Image 1 (tube, rainbow, N blue to C red):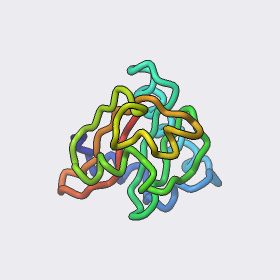
Image 2: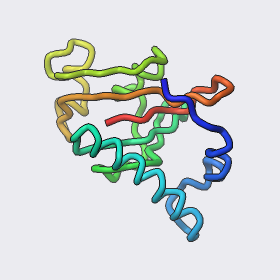
Image 3: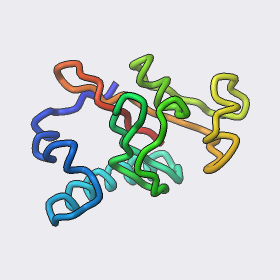
Image 4: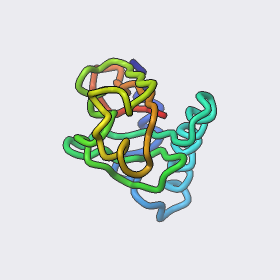
Length: 133
């Protein structure tokens, strides 16, 4: 589990401002989240790194490295399981894992083979999303 510092989140501004950059401040917030996603990917030698915010049926990809998708349906993702179980999840070979082998992100583009992710939980226990590679 990754505990998030609410003061740090507050400095990023409201989640609603994390839409396509229209101001310098918003662009800086997105650059920071993208840098964090890129750092996670580089640390684990993966081509994709993400910070996802839980929006119920969808995940908003607010920190992105290796993809341009702004949102994905939650039911199609590894992050869905991470959010439901509220525990880190590591899948070393999704093609052999019966939980994921037929998911669209494994069988189609981008053809994911492995996943490592952790839930992002506020210090008050609110489940905010995931960080994953």
